[in-house]
Length: 290
Image (cartoon, rainbow, N blue to C red; front, side):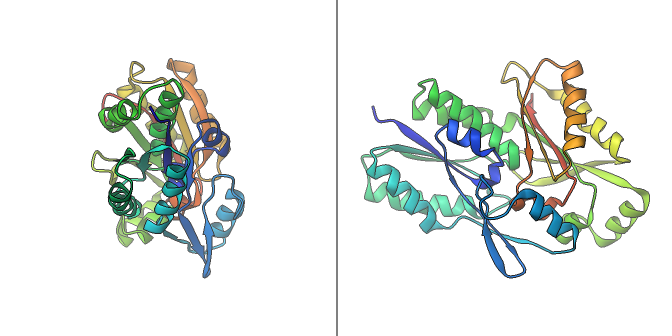
């Protein structure tokens, strides 16, 4: 039986150390700032997260670009030449065209290399929600599970990965068409912090609003208390838009009350951060449902 490699994309927001430890192939999406394209490598060789958020705070408006078909073909053909089967786990198809690029590449690869297993899963997830799915899959691979077993487990449990987050500058959501201009003005005047999540369809959905930053962090924690399912997986991830203090505050709330392991606190990468903005705080865990 051939070994297989998990291929994912940089929207997973995993640390470079974790990606290396799990033997992941990570394709970078891109961020464009003032006409310059920066590939979003997990080791931040193109731009550090601190530099990215500094630029955004100064008013620079980034845009993003998906992984293209040729990039998938190049990476996958390299792995096939190394006699590896391939499991591709992608950023939500509802938020990026990256999944469709992977789908087109897989169709072509399956015709060209019919004896290799080349499988594709739309995680319907984003940031460290996607990362948590990839992390569990990578652990299973290292434990000796087959490519089919890992794929089936991802499909079975991906909708149990809850994504809850809050933003402090609502204008980034307005720019992305997530809320209206009027709602943004009101929210900024009243210090309203929206609480959002990623739905079963992989879409970004606003769920409720609270006034003030501390109440927003407590709201994220309360969502976890309501739905957390340690029988599925005890690993918890937290990501932040250059606000480590708030991320640690949320971590302490969780560890004080719940039986779980906060395995990773990491930056929200520039691909997600271009749409969520600085100071976003996001919480990811396995739940009874999203």
